[in-house]
Picture 1 (cartoon, rainbow, N blue to C red):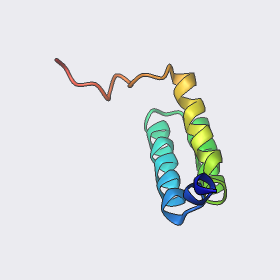
Picture 2: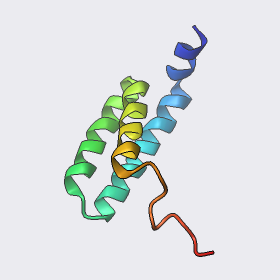
Picture 3: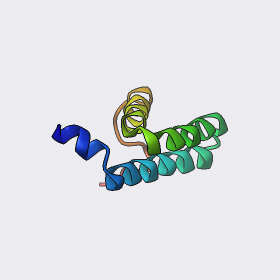
Length: 76
């Protein structure tokens, strides 16, 4: 199945892990140590199961409200 092949590729797994680690770094930067540690665990799982990393990131977006954070927006 093409989707399984894409999600199982080394490039996709690597990209997912890097993305989750980036989210963990942001959480530590905001002082949210619990979320940062949880995301580090998700990064480890995401290497084996890409869908786990993607699902965790989607869940975080839902919890945070889905929109860009205040630090991501530039003044008009």
